[in-house]
Length: 288
Ligand SMILES: Cc1cc2nc3c(=O)[nH]c(=O)nc-3n(C[C@H](O)[C@H](O)[C@H](O)COP(=O)(O)OP(=O)(O)OC[C@H]3O[C@@H](n4cnc5c(N)ncnc54)[C@H](O)[C@@H]3O)c2cc1C
Ligand SMILES: NC(=O)c1ccc[n+]([C@@H]2O[C@H](COP(=O)([O-])OP(=O)(O)OC[C@H]3O[C@@H](n4cnc5c(N)ncnc54)[C@H](OP(=O)(O)O)[C@@H]3O)[C@@H](O)[C@H]2O)c1
Ligand SMILES: *[C@@H]1O[C@H](CO)[C@@H](O)[C@H](O)[C@H]1NC(C)=O
Image (cartoon, rainbow, N blue to C red; front, top):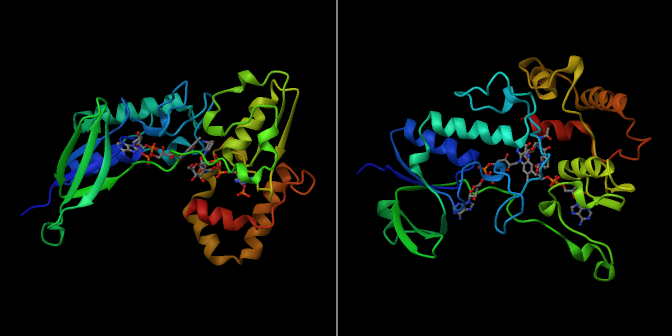
């Protein structure tokens, strides 16, 4: 018996490329997508929808186009290095159309359960239950399941860490609910957290707010996207030469070079941003 029917959950960037990989291997993919479109998180929606990841209107990707593109489908030459989310979504659409992937996607069909079949030890098969937009359930049997359902579906708003929040008279919300700065004109804003969302939202609200504060409990090494000579940072540092340097040079030296470069941009001590962790720990996890 050949194992060939594959269920994919989600038609975001991971799901789409997995459909293609299945086709390349002669397998029979069926991709279930709960929303009405491909692109996953990169499908922008004016209002955040429950059980779905959400992005803001100004979001641009943090990886340069040469680094992020599918290796068998270059990003159009006239697209910028760091693309707006609408361009990313266009690119995924071109990819799906070029490789004729859409015919394998069942839209508005959510996967509710995935279970091993009772005879799994012999057959290796899985049972899926899906639900369409009218609430109708359907059962399916597959030989394999690839889960591409995304990581950023649910916002984490740890209100227990904000004593007194219940009597706070201003507005508070998670970045999952942030679409743009239009409600921030003349307001006093505090952005909690210095991840990519916190950084973007603080900068963007500062254009219109009366005052913006950024709160971080442990600081961060702040990097730019553009590096020496105006080239994308990831292109300059993600090279074989730099990988060899990482093997040859002691951590101490790598940190000294890396932190030196970042401090030349903004002195992290002066800006009260300097974290306890060293810089290379971060780089190693990013460029591995
Ligand atoms: C604000 C923000 C900015 C980001 N920026 C970057 C960036 O610059 N660079 C980068 O590389 N990454 C970035 N990411 C990470 C992002 O997760 C990835 O870029 C990418 O979207 C992951 O693709 P995915 O296909 O795994 O998941 P997703 O894009 O999340 O897609 C998952 C899909 O699965 C569907 N789905 C989920 N559950 C079910 C179900 N039960 N049944 C059917 N369908 C289901 C969803 O509807 C969705 O279409 C960012 C994340 C956030 C939150
Ligand atoms: N393309 C882009 O430019 C872009 C834009 C947005 C997001 N993203 C991606 O999306 C993912 C999520 O990013 P994100 O910025 O939303 O989240 P994140 O990277 O997880 O950052 C969350 C921030 O909130 C802080 N925080 C969490 N709980 C806290 C608490 N209880 N009290 C105080 N501070 C708290 C964290 O501090 P600690 O570090 O101390 O925990 C951290 O600074 C990342 O992978 C990011 O790269 C990309
Ligand atoms: C870009 O975003 C991805 C996914 O959210 C994250 O894993 C990665 O660390 C980010 N890279 C940079 C350079 O910010």
